[in-house]
Image 1 (cartoon, helix red, strand yellow):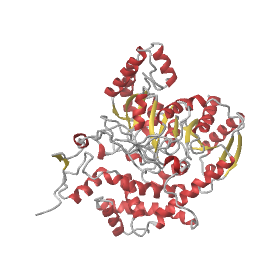
Image 2: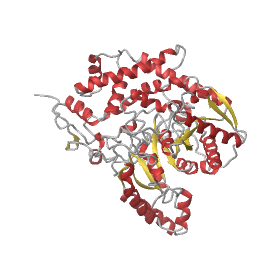
Image 3: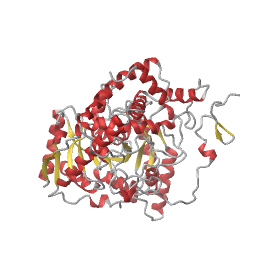
Image 4: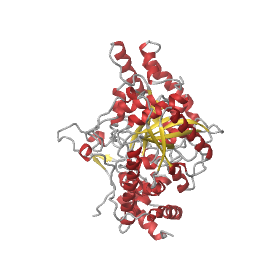
Length: 99
Length: 477
């Protein structure tokens, strides 16, 4: 067993997922199986291997920033079009501060 | 109009000969696609206004005697993880059921600039996470070749529309085999270009260090032409490469005599026998074309799936954090606090596989586990990339199977995540190394299920890959 039910609940907290109780049990089973499979990597000695964060062919070809110049933006109205709730040019969310 | 027999070149010739106009073609293609779609569920959304507007532009250019573009009038479908301005883009997720993007992906822009006509958006596994298209919130896609079977995934809809003749070309995305595996299952050609070759701007992020956009078509030639249109530096994606884009379609026909081709021993272990036979027969064709074939080793292949499921889920858990109920259309109704809004929206919006991957990714990145999982996987990724680099010191191209087995039955693997993941065992390594790779049809099993031959080459050497594929396709037809 890789994970306790408590750990699964803790990870769900971190991931902002309100998993239901039946989902917790299934998730625990699935993650156990996947993590057991992943243990395979421990067969390899990687002490002297550099980690690869990104595929890099020739860094100078790709590690670039674009020119810093003004460009048209979407605009507030367009940016808000997909908001579930908006008003006065802002995204609206439930109240965060109680008085 | 069934598009099975149409190609970029045939449509261009017909348009210039005035056999039909681009508008007529778009209309007929849309009617046929809408009529046939219930058989496969491959399209999620049609975009007739956009298609007709693009077709009108092509007709105007032809009437004015101007070049109508490399993709003039060609009906194209776009995987629903790639953004299309004004056309619903769901990512196969309930969370984005009503999402209308405010901008176009660079690849989409380039297709329309080249005269391509976008018919609609194709079904896929939710956020491109899956190998069977069964993780779509809008129902699975049925394989056009065998309707009780999966089309593969995650780009199942994009493979199916080309196989079904409801589009000539399509775009898919590949993070861990999601173009090549469905191409092989549906009997079409599919290409995963070098990482960075095609801008990811407007491709909904799943695992940013592994995500690729790539083409599907019936033929190698049409895939090469479409890749030529969408490839090349884009300042909107800092990882897009400056490497010049050759005229792929013009360089396809070069002789492959004397090319050195490697068969990785590891790709022939645990193969279903009929798949193995078909791959060996394809290798014989390449030998007869004058290729020098030798066995090579890619010793870290057995570690690819484990490596991938750490790196891809870690990146996904970060990328999918943006779906929090604030910006993207869906918000849980019963949420009263900010925290409830995040947690309930995400739990209601994401399907089981997305949640599994978000959970796994969050776990491997959580305090105390980083070195054991994420760092370890990044080191093994180096070893996998090194395997290929060493192999390419000896050979110009690598060939093998795309998948260990052909299309499986709907429902067959849904309850066993690891068994599902193993269908990507030969395709995931190419993504981890960032090299170009493709699937080209190489026959069918006795049950009539298509099998794909995989071809892999060095970074940015899509040309060698296309040459091998084209020579094979021509010889085997």
